[in-house]
Image (cartoon, rainbow, N blue to C red; front, side, top):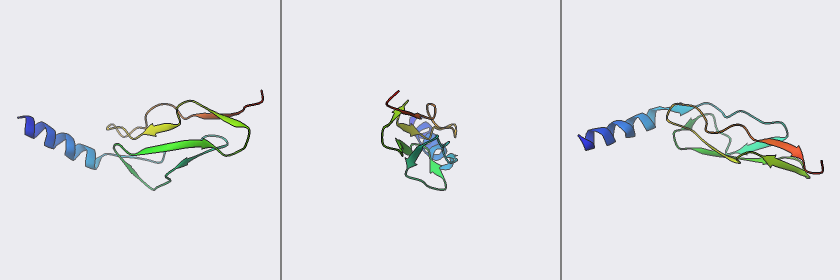
Length: 79
């Protein structure tokens, strides 16, 4: 039974994909691909000097096809 459950979870992980993660104003993420599999991660960073990333910089493609956490935001670090 344990082998069956592990096998089933593995198959689901191979099939489920996430679309492209949401973009954030003045932020980019890498890697930029057409599709992402469960467990794939993207890392956000601010494009402009002096801006600070608020929120988690890493998001993960979850087994439900959605991205973890909220899209981080870039804000001017001088305010």
